[in-house]
Amino acid sequence: MRQTLIAVAAGVAAIWLGFQIAEGSHFWPMVFFTLALGGILTRVLRVPFDVILTGLVLFGYLVGNRGFAQLMPAPGLPLLPAETVLLVAGTWRGIVWAHSRQLPFARDNLNHFLMAWLVVGGGRFALDLPRHGFLAVRDFAMVYYAVLFFLVQHMAREPRARRWLLGCLLAGVALLPFTYGASELFPRLFLTVLTFNEVPLIYFKGDLAFTFFGVASLLWFFVVRGSWRGLAVTMSAALVLWILASDNRASLLGVTCAATLLLLAGRWRYPLTLGVASGVAALALLGMAALGNNAWAHGKLRSTADRISSITDFAGQGSYMSGESYYKGDNNRFRATWWKNVILETWDSNPVLGLGFGHDLAGGFLQEYYPDGTAEDFAARSPHNIFITVFGRMGLLGLAVWAGFCWILLRRTWHSLRTSMVESEWAIWCGLWVVLVSATFGVVLEGPMGAVPFWVMLGLASARDTDEAETSKAALPPGDETASA
Image (cartoon, rainbow, N blue to C red; front, side, top):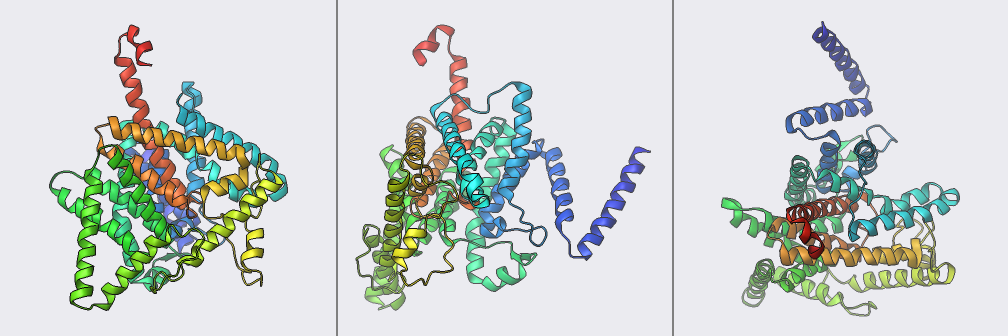
């Protein structure tokens, strides 16, 4: 009898969902599909639903990028995948923490600084919400996305959940170069055919794609073993060469920072591989340019040299002749002018607590940089630097907390590189620095496309460190605990 009732209910639901799809309404079909897929995966993988959902959303942001972020199950109704994960996983983990009488954070400096980040940001947001409304909520996202760290840190302490989340991360960065490359080769296909409710399923913000190329390079190099090792190392080097050939300087600086950390820690294989690959590529281009008089090789050499030299052109006064890099000076002036305006306005108005969430950080900049009013459609709200954004929104108090977090992140990265023998952990810790350095020159952590992978990766890395510390402590005789501390 029970099976008959279930079959009848399923049949009625299937007919109703079919009518919904026929009428062009996809909201409820998507809800049922997500629940069904989550239920199947939960039963097969024996992993909680909130972990399944978090992994799928992580994969979606890596592979679909801005397209995934803008998905609308019904016209005018955005999906908001990151907020959905925070709601579902936050509710479930809150119940688990309350039932088990656990604290939602570990007792270490990283957790303490991120709790302070949420408290300071939440206090500033409470002051701004009545005045700015939705704009304050939108700007506050750069703070509340950090909740993902605490959720993932708790999830990843269970081995199956950790394997699922790490697998989604690896699958996402493995497919990323192919989806990005295909979208560049066949833009019409991705913009007009591969859509849902007239929104592209895959649509990339170029600087974010190359940022996660850097993360992918590290993961390819340090995670893959066995018969695929040679292909993985080749792919890792190819991704960095792709970054070099692009016009994105922030991701190049991020990879350089990660390689430098590895080199200083005595982990020289990855930096050496990148150096050899870059040298071979440069020699090949020089040979083509000098011996074959190849115009394309000449252009690539000049544009790469221009991009590298423009990194230290802080005032944007340099002259760049290549077609791919002629605008780099303007780009530098754009950032420098905006940063200066935000710093001066914040310092004059409220240096301790900042200008708040919802305040237009671009107002003074637009008046100076576009005095003729030609930037009427300018919609950016972040000055392309996470540190300047934090100072503008939360003042010196918020900046001090964020700087403390970065210092702890550096110490934890260094500790992992020097003491851990798990190379996949090196890749994640160094990958965090690729993202963070990129966020210093672009809009990365203010939106979900960059913030979700960043906080998930940090949660994965921290969970393993916390587990290892507790295991080591438990293995010590009682009399040795004080000495170990």
